[in-house]
Length: 492
Image (cartoon, rainbow, N blue to C red; front, side):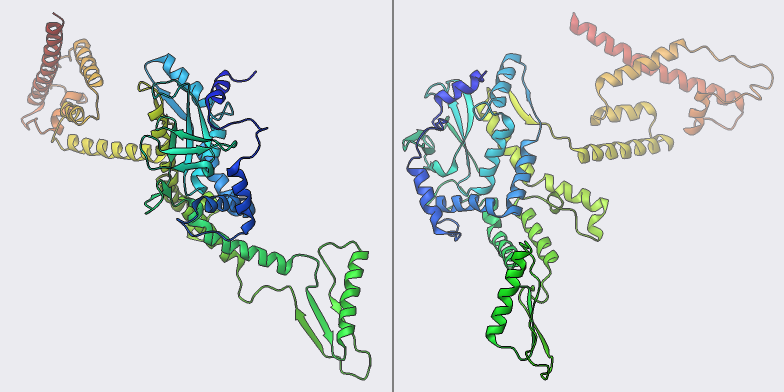
């Protein structure tokens, strides 16, 4: 059964989804511009012809196309969440996003949107499908519009004019369309233009494609790789030998490989001097691995990513774990972060005000940094307590003031200590040599660490420790009772 949300969106969309519609003027114009070959206009000129050629180039250059697919898949794979106090609004918003692109779903919507976002200098366009021509009308669908059919006007009220496949123009108002740009660039004539990832990549990708074609034409195929000539042969004999070699390859069913052409002299009196003419060798000093690494580096720069996202790290120190972590941290701050922020801003503008959209990104490095900071703070606090600068209670109050300890946990600790102090049995007063042979109590150890105890003897030490414990727990109970009294007064 068809998704009712998708059917409603299709009903109100300006982007006709009827596959039986005859191609309109825009499609015919694109077919015409495609006959001009692979030359591409300069950036900022003939922008729609250039964008069509840029996207077409992705289909004939496998590395660039695969890199774009990798980036789109990464972006579409991010998990997201909706937060709202209104469960009904949250559920309706989730259904809207899950039914994007006329019911195909969130992932196809992001894949299609991401390709335009990366390859089109005019950017990517999202149709906000509403039931009426009013900003308060319900939003029933999201659809990716073909960038080649969207014309940016520069008008805030009507930012885009869309040409459908029937040749009809639609004035899309600000609440009916959203324009996404990765790298906006000012232009003296055109509004809403960017320097897309494909524009940044194209010249380098074209050079690599030329290298690949040269290699294929030079090495591939079934033409002769070399001619080995023995002195004393004529041109006609040479041509006959080549033809014979091709016929021999045909008879053997060889499609790629052809045995070398060998000529012999017609007279045994002539000296057998051999000369080899290479027909399928690569240029001297050509290093394909080096060229490929440079091309992968350009791919990572153009797509605002890192090298290891497209290929294993180069040999050497770059393969270390620390280097990988550093590069991964840098990658998350570039293209991926820009995509998440752009999409979050778009979705939060079109969803109800009481629903918040966000991506669920687990930042392991940030958690690690927070844990390391907490560890350092704990070690510093322990040193201050051990040195006698502060006691445990002062450390808690400092942590509470700095936000490292919540008020609830602080109150619970105080209450537990007060309860433990009330239930603790009194220490017996030893007769005889005043506690000889007994291990010092916790209070005595605390008093020794703080330098309170005197050297007068065990009796004075015990008394000082007891006085300190009495003062400490008295202050704790006093603070606790004052808080309780304050809360009771507030309730009254």
